[in-house]
Image (cartoon, rainbow, N blue to C red; front, side, top):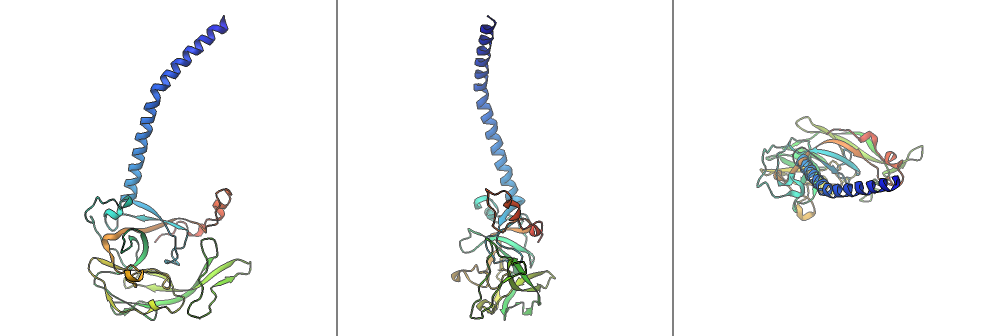
Length: 289
């Protein structure tokens, strides 16, 4: 008797629970949907107006940036345009709160002529500047930018990094083995100092055609951008017909590089959790620009 009553009570309670669950389920789904929409809006606002992450898939900004770096870019320093928004949503007819970059800043922008892909380069020339390269040395408004040889830049060979091969028949071997057997790339490195006092390191491996250019006047509303890896950067020294970017409209600016939030040498394997740590370039994380 007791067993029968207990079973009946359980069945009744179960039915009631099932009925309550059926009523509760749509409410839970509605709450989750609202939460998801809010989360998307918060992330969208944060990425559009404050900070946005970018990864570095190339070596055109060596030695400052290497393949496998992940950085945060501040979105407000140059103002906002449609390119600041996720997927370049065409919601802003023109750039608002516009501000001109400072020479030497590292900026992310939509690369001409397609204005679709995010590129990162250093701001070298402002509107009205005359820019020229002579023998691998940068000239701004006819004045040579100091370029001083410093210690070689060294980076370990990894899945994300292989050494350049010598060109033009010079036969230079940039890959060397250290005493412990580690293989590294050694590249000639120089320190440049712009007229405003901003200093940064560049690589200049060998004589290349882009080491000598005709003087060009930076038009109003545009910028002359260059990669720090001077021999391996398709930048404003090349026009768009040559695969470069020419002068970059300031309306194409997306953000200013601010802090390195992660860096990996590419050796991570998701099924080997310890490689999540061994693949990290810890010494690069946290660096500012």
